[in-house]
Image (cartoon, rainbow over the protein chains, first blue to last red):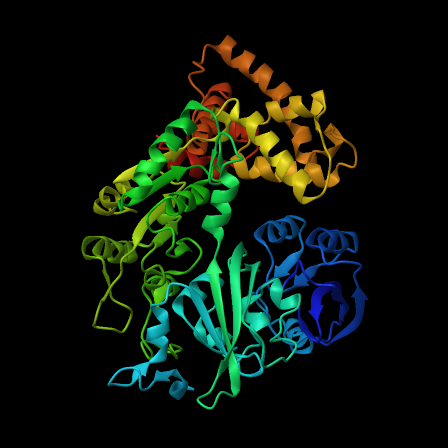
Length: 118
Length: 464
């Protein structure tokens, strides 16, 4: 089963703000029947930081899920309404976050920076 | 880490830094030389939403999530020495609210004058921003917009009530603006400079909710690795807004009642109480009197909370307010999405006028937002409205023969019920009447299964 995932980026971390992200990581995940999965990542640089444009990109590209840190309620509601799963208040390096997501162990509010409690 | 939190030489005894900073009513964060969070105070935690242990060791931009952090913060650039910088900017907190703030960042120095970290000061600017924009808005108070007699009554009562310290109960259907009203009461009260803390009583299981509300001490239960202040304590000097109070479990109702009596909270695992100076505002879409009858809500708590009660009318009962709100949201979203939409086509207006807005103002706002997003012209047409509104005219067309049939059958129409429960009961009675009392046929008319009809009849007391 294939899944598409978008993570707003700030260096190698999840961007602190959804509306201020100028780079996003788009991940295509293929989950195999044996339980393993393959994730292909690509980084897209956006022309400007805009929560509206980002929402349009997410809908137009048919994303299944978004992992982000701070997102305003109206965008959260809009994406949820459009059947996009939103994992928000996720803090940490993208690799670690993605690994948690692939393991099915990521939830909103996960803090995955080193020295954090999660 | 604990040794970081002491002040020596200021008084005869050594002082703990954390409780000292907690009494400062402005958000404070102490950062190390690399811009990582060492310590935050209570006002910071209330504003941002993260606890001390959540943010300790995090780069400050991930903890505060402030616009300025990403647009030229000197801490991020690694500059150790600079003059204190003050900026008006914004953050998005853990509850997904964008909050305007005044941020000050200043380097701090050790005893020898060497740079050793930074101090961040975060001031909530919501009230000031609100006051400056209030003058330009007619027929509105805070985020509430309305011109109908019901809303005017609320606007007139509100300033007087806000200044008292009485508990307030806000009732109304979902989407009528209970949260907005609670915030307006807080912003217009003497506690406006204090924190406004919101807790959704329906969002957490009972055990977590108790700790969330009243806090716990370290070691109170497995996983309690640090003292947690609890929302009551976080709201000290301000207002605690308990939304969906009808979902508060009975044992916690007792604890809340006890707090309202003596204003003292006892965190889990602690024998000593904390006197919290907190005004409590509650809201619910449920009928608490009915819940009292069903023994699901304590009568004494209802009396205690029901000191002042505001009832927000559903949008369908607010008459011309719908037009006012449509224009208000249109201008809001025009501005936000940089559009120049002048108004609605006649057909779009007609469709909105026919719709009953079960989701009330929130739904209307979402519909306008959707339409403004999808409209590339200067007028919102039918095609720009959400598709589900297309069913409205069809439903109205179907409803009319049913009305005619009911009139012909002699069933009294009566007034339109004001709550969903009332409407549902009416629908069931209508269907039973039309089916000549045959439940199977009535279930078919309603499009429900027999068991659903039976269950709902039992709920509404129609089974026998």
